[in-house]
Length: 223
Image 1 (cartoon, rainbow, N blue to C red):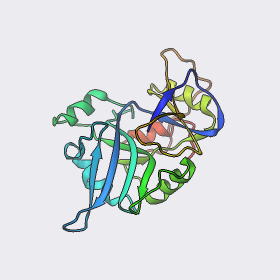
Image 2: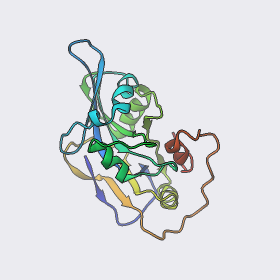
Image 3: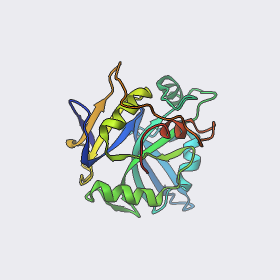
Image 4: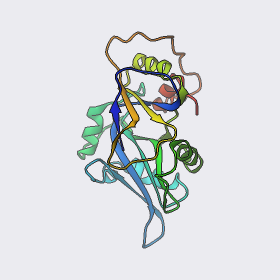
């Protein structure tokens, strides 16, 4: 499911607003292997290519962090730098089979399509997000992307201040429409020179080894 562009940031009681890093969109299939019944990961990009073999850190950890298998989740694959910002060059090097010393991939999940072998795409987004939070055990490699309801403008300016790509606004009653670009999801890219509404506090308790978490803590998000 794809978002349509919005003309400007906005507030809404009917949307959840989520930051976007500008990484690689990917669907994660976590399934039980037919031979040994152990969970396995396939991480498919928009062309259907499986990226998991190039990302062994994710292939070895994510299958054990997701419940209600078989499951399919939607998310954004990023390679953060030391400040938690997306490094597109490092991600492309890794996906091309190269080495990226000092960089580790992170999968930011924001939606749940299948759980316990059953499709839930007809459920409203709010229910899918609640289910997602119940079955995922977050780690340094797997982060359930938090969002905020109502305060889209505040999040937008905080995202702009932190140098992120933009904000996605998704209607809380939205079903998941595979292959569709819909007004139920809106994409709001940041623009250079945006003036933030307020100063975002520095992180206080995120360890230095988890730059993605540190950056999320600088945004006005609710779990």
